[in-house]
Amino acid sequence: MPSQRLHRSRSGTKRLAALVAAAALILVGCDSGGTPHSADGRQQLTVAALPLTDSAALYLARDRGLFAKEGLDVRIQPVQQSIQALPALLKGQVDVIASANYVTYLQAYEKGTLDLRILAEGVRIAPHMMDVLVAKDSALKSPADLAGKKVAVAVLNNIQSLTLNAILDARHAGRPVYRQILFPQMGPALQRGQVDAVHAVEPFDTAIQGELGARVLLDGGSGPAKGLPASGYVTTAAFVKKNPKAAAGFRRAVEAASALAAEDPAVVRTELPKYAKVTADQAKSIHLPVYPTTADPSALRRLVRLMRAQGLLGKDIDPAPLLVT
Image 1 (tube, rainbow, N blue to C red):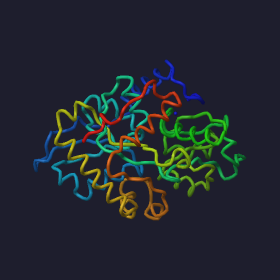
Image 2: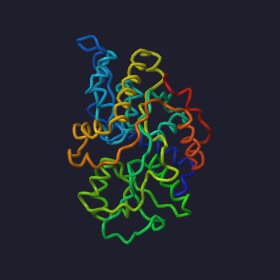
Image 3: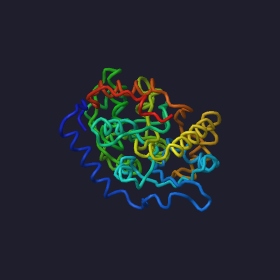
């Protein structure tokens, strides 16, 4: 997520284009969507997803039969960055991207790279669902110490740096320098001293603390970040136009699964070890995000305003027309 002030520039646009191009080479194992229907008549959908708490509703909807109830056969394709799946989405090889951080996809929409549609909200930020972690013997003692230090984020210029900058700005503290490191590599990078801190999302947050004894320097879900929409289930306008029934059914299934997660967090803790590298014991202590049961344009407008304030969008975007109803 690279410059401290995150100003939009031609270099920023080139970085996004380069990342998308590289992603086309990184994403492997994605089929072309297979046959349009299963043997039992259900429509097949391929969904790319990260192994994060963000994706819990997706897996719950699949495992609880909520997709099947809507006549859908959902195949899940794991990825390590949601943007890895963008080329496949544009080619129709992937139908939906789950755990898609809104910042990257709203930027792609503004640039004209993606005719974005949001099928359902994924999660909103809750306390300690992501934390800034430092080594147990680190000299960094307070958030103010992060000024100019190297902090790992999964993708440059997305939800992690956006929210961390907002939190530090509210504290009148200086911003760090961001380094892009995938979540599974954050622990080793911190241990080797390649970065001064990592901004880790659950379940990697809890795992790094448990395995390395890392300390929480700052709650990444605090202050202006709390309650902010972080990720969603995104697709293209072309997919929705071609498959209105499947799009509506997918939304209903995910929102029903989110309602289960919101009502009883235990169902998420039981689901996590099935798709994420987390043990049942670790799942018990993980800090979960908020699982919204309906999409809220006003909450997304708050995200857009924050992106505008930090120069990540050149103009206001009204998210309401992007939501699939």
